[in-house]
Length: 76
Image 1 (tube, helix red, strand yellow):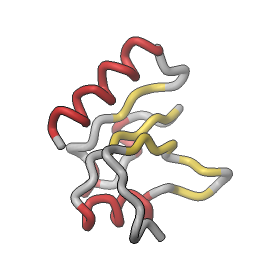
Image 2 (cartoon, one colour):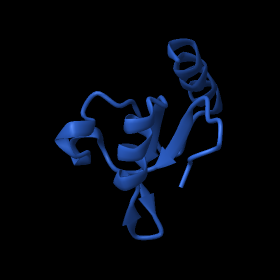
Image 3 (spheres, rainbow, N blue to C red):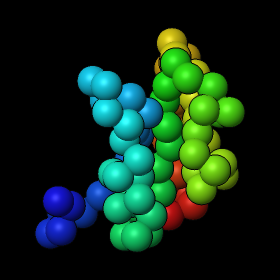
């Protein structure tokens, strides 16, 4: 799915038209690509294996989103 594509970091909506983005998140972890979730759900709704992944609540504040992306890129 993402083979052959260079990705520095990713922002995932937790719910993609009724489907959780967990399979994509798992692939990003396997590839070592930093990411965060954006969601209307709370951190308590995350699966336990993603408890350490940052979750920004919707509606997302632009400054907070840019800061979070900057943090992902610096950690990469």
